[in-house]
Image: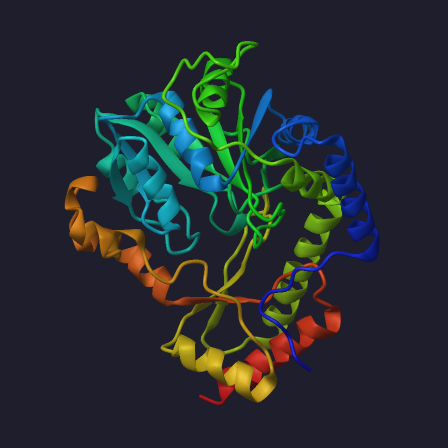
Length: 381
């Protein structure tokens, strides 16, 4: 048996529906931002439980739109070091200086203790990344810290489509949230992003910034120095098709994760530990993460699984922390310097985790084979 690390396929029914939507666009003569985008925005706002959703061309610009709408230029923005570089880059492009904070080993989420140590009077926003589709169990403490210091809590929900904590969905938990619909995400439009918020002023400003600073009935009036971050109609058709199946997609991902949990607990593979999800949180399972508790070489394990068992593991959540990226050696002025030892947990998790295959078409037989292969491979070292 062979198991791919990642697979993205559409059913025949989905292909027919998508192609019908594409044909309508082509026959309409209007292929840029239009009715499909508006409908996708409407459905996404309703799904997340917020007043406003704003479609964009990608998740990175969604973060930048939020931060520019808040007005972070000349201020600081707090970002976890354990995230994709886009989170920090968006803050820098919005004119802020980045303060990196550490994570928690047991959750992979932002450390509220390190946040409290590093937040400053000039911090305008805290970017909370819902790592791997899990909302931070410490979100209330993080929200309180933000409130105490007058900083806006912004969700980076790129991994967390449909994730919940105490019944509330990602995208409705901060002043605003950013989503990505990149091809590897839980829901995908190929390329694309979304901003969600209940803040009307933030929404209106972000909407103008998305389209060269213009809004209202007069297309030749530009009120802000904006950009071209408009989404396309074709991407929106893909998004609307995903919305038809969103609960089925999430149910399947959670079934796969639950199956892994059950089989791994039964196997008790030496040196391997599960990432536990608290009972009040429903993960979107962007990734299925395992820890190394003993010194197993990650690349050797991945190579053995692929060569000996035909199992390809997907990429790690992140295998390098943001604060160690070479660009910050080249441009140290972009960040607030921090001692290396303040990122001990981040340095640990980037080196001591790996992920198992998790995608919609993964079968129960494949799940069992992956776990069996992992057990044999680990015990062979």
